[in-house]
Image (cartoon, rainbow, N blue to C red):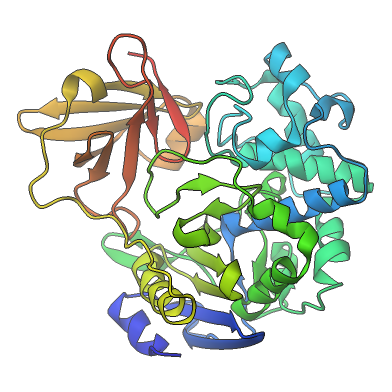
Length: 436
């Protein structure tokens, strides 16, 4: 397929990977490496990798099916569909819609991690906890990527179909498409050749010790695992079913730069240059990448079991989309050779989410981000009292980490205005609002 996957995983220090390409109606795939550095079991074409937030496209598909069946209006308040639905902000409760959640403009903080178990009522119980959770932004006012918002969409699917989310997923998508390498939870995953995620520890890659968070996050991207070949078979549905084309229509014409070349948002889909759509997924040491050029009928999926998977994926995506769709892929961001100084007056300050306070500060001619947990849960995630790392100015509205983090340089945008000439948000996909 124009590259040697075994050479790529060695080059980028990735334990294992799968690639699948849909073009001219045919699927070609390749696998290389091992599922785990501990077991050394070989990756094959029917192995399953976790696809993280690519699951959101599946959830959006289930939501659109509800629209097509005439049982859901995307612009009608969710409280009309979900019995007892309530947020901490009464006005948000009255106005929040499925369209808000599909476009990450619902104002629900991105990551609530209330453990509600792994039973069939986990999503229902989680959504109930949002009644007491902070609601930072009014619906429809701020783009802020929200896993919690997609959990609410999962509950919407459950209510309107009368079944647990994973049962609806299988009944409405997995079974009709004839997919065989699909796992909707850990118990199903062990029935397949399942990839294990790998994270950096002491400069080395080591297998993760957990599969996923609580089942409440199933609709946003915690559990679903699949082979690359069958992931592009799912995409084939989107290229052949005209009713699903509406999901690719632009809903947001622009979003803050947080790397990855994302220019806007559809209903579930990320929008890239030249009409390409896609999504990226990160889940417990696994990174997954999906890009689709609908006009050319081309789709490519790259699944890796490492936090270092992004450079490998870029090489593959660039080659496939360039050769088969004539599309140039945005390269991973890197710091400029001679960065301009940080605009301290506008950029520096402390920005807050539910879990963390993040402070951008300068020390001489260097700039640093200092992340401090706000609660015990955040402290357990961070594993220390604070995380401090150097950043440099990328352009007039963005900074970038001086060194790679989780395998790639991270971009954060400083956007909006607080009325005093200072940025209102520190944005890495999810918006942290200024507090000082």
